[in-house]
Amino acid sequence: MLRKVTKTPFDFDVASNEISFKGFLQYHSSGLVLLKARLYGILEQPCDICTTQFKLNIDEDIELFISDGIFEDEDHSNLDVIESLNGYVDIQEILHSEIELIKSDYHYCSSCRNSVEEF
Image (cartoon, rainbow, N blue to C red):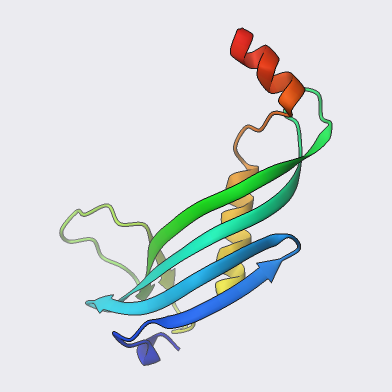
């Protein structure tokens, strides 16, 4: 439950296939919980040019906030916030969302990347 997250960091470590998601949750302020983590591993991905499957190395730092309820950005701070309407944090779902976000970008195998850079 979000309301049980305190100023003392709560560590988590979850994985999906060859991707690991490791970090902590910590109470920040005003009903916001900070999620700070590292997403790393290997993702099988089709090249966006030739469709050949290749291994994409993933190594990203993730920092976002989770709101206990609807988040109202009164300060216009443009925070990256996930709203939890049931008071729970599903770390596995956040991992899945981050993987899908990476997949939605353009990715090229090494052969096509060289030709794109030349172009």
